[in-house]
Length: 61
Image 1 (spheres, one colour):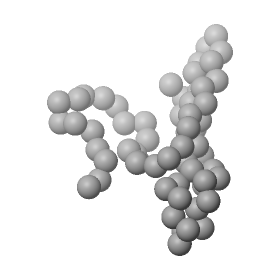
Image 2 (tube, one colour):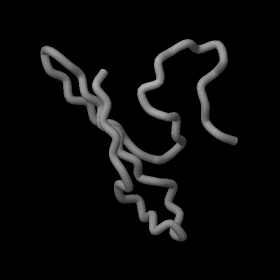
Image 3 (cartoon, rainbow, N blue to C red):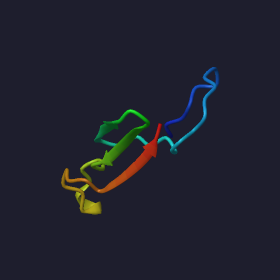
Image 4 (cartoon, rainbow, N blue to C red):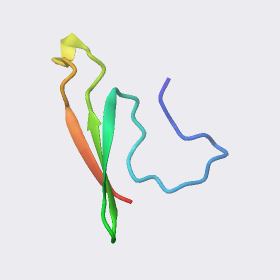
């Protein structure tokens, strides 16, 4: 099953929906908010995932 947006929800997609383990840090200033999304994978040893950050995405909100 792929993650996705419910049909009843109307929004602008800033990043593709992914279902992964991770965390988000926000940087808030007087003029903007930046969200950094850290993807730690799913702990699949076959993909060399060990719980460390695999990738990072940043979006301006």
